[in-house]
Image (cartoon, rainbow, N blue to C red; front, side, top):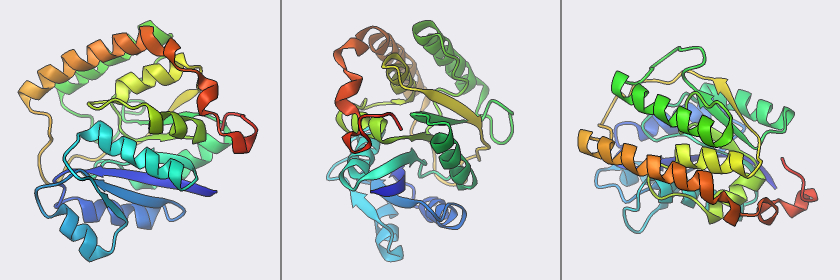
Length: 248
């Protein structure tokens, strides 16, 4: 069984993908990585192939959720104990990955989220986006009783049980707040630690103003559904039997 995998979803990240991978190779040397190229229209795939990077090329553009789930399927198939998402836009700092791995192992957590809002260092996102983030934090608190300060953070590490769960069940669009609720409602343990994030240097975000309105509506509905519909899952179905059914 292998130890830890970095999942890098990427769509049109030709200006960032090399910096992202090299940051991981330099600052998180104990991690393997896989790039999930979501059928980019630019040179992302060509640059990955030219650089000899480990990359899975999606057959068609499927969205962030499907790309990340592909990474979890990869982690499950190749027997990784832990998996962490690092976005291909270069905003996540790989210098925090070794610390995250140490904490999730030592404290036996199921999910560990890197939050930019605990110590409020680094890039803090726009005011409008922070309003949306605060709204999702409130929803999570309502449904689970837990406080998650950065529910839209894509920098999240999980153990084997949650890898198995996400390989089977993962939202297609904007999955972070919804999956936080589901993980907590299933009784898995979740913790946040402070991290610093960076502003995007190249390219543009896929979330335009119109998509932001759709995002708020869609994710709010998804959070309500996750809050009331988690009973269809049984946590035991996703336990890693090679560890005697115990949570990692």
